[in-house]
Length: 237
Image 1 (cartoon, rainbow, N blue to C red):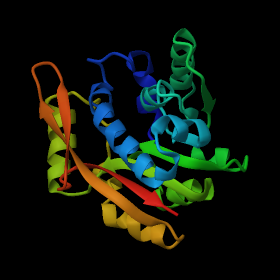
Image 2 (image 1 turned 135 degrees about the vertical axis):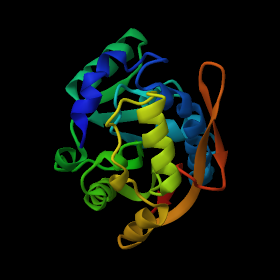
Image 3 (image 1 turned 90 degrees about the vertical axis):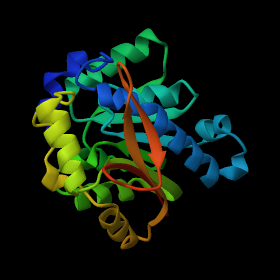
Image 4 (image 1 turned 120 degrees about the vertical axis):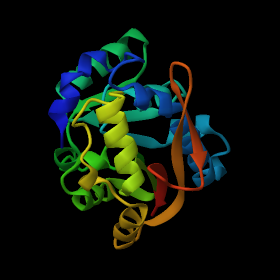
């Protein structure tokens, strides 16, 4: 995984105009999807507050805590892991300053797996496109999922448009993403994730495209039925 790239800009992780700008801008749209799928999955619990109180959540590749904080502010019970100590340190400091109870740990999915913990909800956003072996990454996630659980992933489709938009434009021309962040060859098509998951009895629940709309100083991400580059999906066992 390209951890050194993220370590380099860890101190600017929470700068809304910094290197993680796009991650910040898309989090609201990703959260809407997450909440929708959790309510659909655990409809018998009636509301998000009850779901968050009763279900154990793992945030894989949490970075500086963008998603973990959003979940914790809604009362979620979150364990969050990342291989970058510098990012985890920043995340811990922020959680302490806001009195948020988030269990941050320096770990990757491979060594965390050996601790034999299980979770009801596992979320990994914009991470799988940075790993060397996405199939092994998925298998490690599957091994940590409780029965009747849900997995939510977001990543980037591998096609010509994603190459032009995320690497040529975002990295090389506009420089809104640090150069070298992405490797187009590691992008994953939705069907590749779904096909591998099915081998382990895990099936697709929902998928949606995520598309950025430029604003004056930021981006607003909209959810679409068509996947052109970024997408988010949920899987059930």
